[in-house]
Length: 145
Length: 85
Length: 87
Image (cartoon, rainbow over all chains, first blue to last red):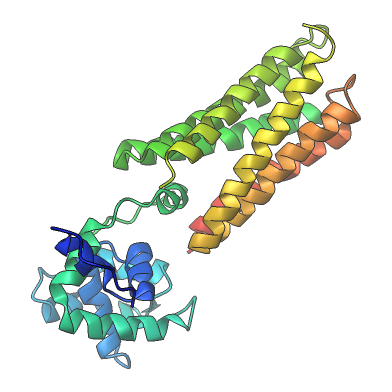
């Protein structure tokens, strides 16, 4: 964890900087909304279970099918896995980078303990130039949160 | 052969320019604006290469080609430098 | 506008492509997104195109080496886009 001296009214800055670096990086590059985070953590908590979009929506008290966009976004980021048998079932699976499991674990803990800090971080992250550039080349856009 | 290649290059850079512009319209990230401009300029450069080679082989368009290419790359570099955090 | 203007401009262009390539490499390092690596190589090749054009093919701008390198650069960009969408 990086520690910063409190400067005047920079309390919010302290909150944002107090989270572990790899969690901050993970959120910056993968999480664009609280809904998406909740979906990811739900899948992770029940990692051996397969969910349909409706089941996920129900579990999170959202409108039916409302979480489909988030689920598809997670799949395209290599954080979830989808099988079409014949309905789409999703489950937690790191298809691109296994080392992220520890980070997601960390994120889960941090979110439980410091929910507001994580939410602030999700929505205060300045628009990343590099990510925007790379995302521009996605022909079919996934809707953000 | 050369002509076909220049046209293919032009189509590719035009596609890049379009995709970057579309994203710029969506999220207003300035880097995308300059990048889009760059690829537009590169498209023009490739088209001019085609014109230079196929349509007007007796005229030397190299100066204008290079100036457009330079303008394109300067836009990109300007964007990369100024819009970097 | 003497005969040195063209290679001079090519030189500036080559340098600009190199700078862009280095920026893309930096983005690749921070995001680990393959697209940036491919773009970096593509712009490096574009720089090489101008370099070769200025040195070897000053009087023959449509030299086959020149447009081949340019072609590879753009094919790489196309590959990067396809790769990005192949999910």
